[in-house]
Image (tube, rainbow, N blue to C red; front, side, top):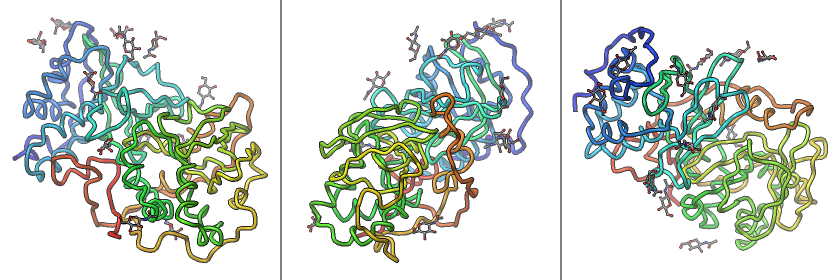
Length: 405
Ligand SMILES: *[C@@H]1O[C@H](CO)[C@@H](O)[C@H](O)[C@H]1NC(C)=O
Ligand SMILES: *[C@@H]1O[C@H](CO)[C@@H](O)[C@H](O)[C@H]1NC(C)=O
Ligand SMILES: *[C@@H]1O[C@H](CO)[C@@H](O)[C@H](O)[C@H]1NC(C)=O
Ligand SMILES: *[C@@H]1O[C@H](CO)[C@@H](O)[C@H](O)[C@H]1NC(C)=O
Ligand SMILES: *[C@@H]1O[C@H](CO)[C@@H](O)[C@H](O)[C@H]1NC(C)=O
Ligand SMILES: *[C@@H]1O[C@H](CO)[C@@H](O)[C@H](O)[C@H]1NC(C)=O
Ligand SMILES: *[C@@H]1O[C@H](CO)[C@@H](O)[C@H](O)[C@H]1NC(C)=O
Ligand SMILES: *[C@@H]1O[C@H](CO)[C@@H](O)[C@H](O)[C@H]1NC(C)=O
Ligand SMILES: *[C@@H]1O[C@H](CO)[C@@H](O)[C@H](O)[C@H]1NC(C)=O
Ligand SMILES: *[C@@H]1O[C@H](CO)[C@@H](O)[C@H](O)[C@H]1NC(C)=O
Ligand SMILES: *[C@@H]1O[C@H](CO)[C@@H](O)[C@H](O)[C@H]1NC(C)=O
Ligand SMILES: *[C@@H]1O[C@H](CO)[C@@H](O)[C@H](O)[C@H]1NC(C)=O
């Protein structure tokens, strides 16, 4: 496929398009110079074009020519039938409901997209994106691996809704284990591998996972090394809420049952979300089955005490008597991520703003360290999920980098 030749090498400056509620989507895309790549992509995939043309009551986040270059490179190198992949990708760029730029506020929203093929998502009603307004000026759309796209042309009306042009392609969230590795949650992944829980957690539908950081596991190293397989399983299952996806915007004070049956208590206090005595330190990492929130300590189903005050928490709070280990437990045999993403691993400023905005009015700001940016090394991961299109990993927010056990 000679796909890479069809995009202009230089990003054209788009002319301001007339607003027109009587123009259909095909005409809108064809008439926008910054969407010529999208227009040509749709010509290559007539079935995708037909389904997009019939969409109504939607918001299309349309990747600019420059943004689409990443896709063209992947499709050019992918063998086989890429039609489902392109369909999934455009479904993920199509949000249900008409969101004008003015509908998007500093409070993060998680609107559903059209993406519901089970090969790519296990979120009932459609995988979500995160939208929010930053600095009162920039509309951000956040997708897999916390990839941030900015809206560069807003509010282009068409008969079935509105188009916003974005400067980066949205990434379809990968499965739990691939995203966890990208987030450097290698102790958690090692523990789910050791208990044979990885594949079942990966394929859960509508799930919320509270994911302890590596430091959290290290802090209870003495207890972790003495766990029976059955106890380790109970502990891991205590971190999984099956059947409910709770984004930070919908977390309030509540108790909710976990996969193992016992409840966890969610407390929102002083701009901070707690689950029992653990603190959420990086919320809203999207995964194919739902959402993952990184927490600062390991939960214990035999110590369900809730705390709502950050000064009381410590990584060992749930395991009395546990002491820290020099090595991070469960990580032997788990590959370290070849690409690290600052927004996933540290609590970068973008995390801080999403995090504090869930706080009740009047709450004080949480102490969230500002983090480093992304860094990466060269090795590409294998596809995070079965896609039918070899080489498609670059389009997915999550690469499976697990070692064989
Ligand atoms: C675009 O459509 C919205 C409703 O979806 C409407 O409120 C707005 O006035 C329209 N803008 C223009 C310029 O027609
Ligand atoms: C709006 O779009 C319709 C259909 O494409 C077209 O006939 C009409 O001339 C357009 N109006 C303006 C003001 O661009
Ligand atoms: C979109 O509008 C154009 C111009 O009015 C028309 O030629 C075309 O058939 C329409 N396409 C669809 C899919 O409705
Ligand atoms: C448009 O979509 C939104 C979000 O899915 C939904 O709440 C609303 O009922 C829909 N409106 C119409 C007219 O279908
Ligand atoms: C967007 O804002 C308008 C005006 O406030 C409102 O009528 C509409 O329901 C909002 N749309 C969504 C999808 O929230
Ligand atoms: C996906 O969404 C489409 C359109 O909303 C719907 O017809 C279809 O049944 C859905 N499929 C699944 C697996 O939910
Ligand atoms: C969705 O769940 C099914 C089993 O329930 C699993 O086979 C599939 O891999 C899952 N899809 C993704 C994208 O994780
Ligand atoms: C928001 O403003 C801060 C401080 O001026 C700046 O560092 C940051 O880059 C801005 N972010 C966006 C997305 O505009
Ligand atoms: C955004 O605008 C509101 C009202 O205009 C103002 O109170 C607030 O301080 C602004 N926030 C930022 C981050 O600029
Ligand atoms: C989004 O916009 C902000 C400010 O306008 C900028 O700092 C940031 O780099 C942009 N992000 C991307 C992915 O272009
Ligand atoms: C995990 O599965 C392997 C192979 O099926 C088995 O040998 C091992 O005992 C299992 N471990 C646990 C903790 O169930
Ligand atoms: C990943 O976790 C390991 C073990 O805790 C740590 O040594 C390493 O610095 C972490 N990597 C990043 C990029 O934070």
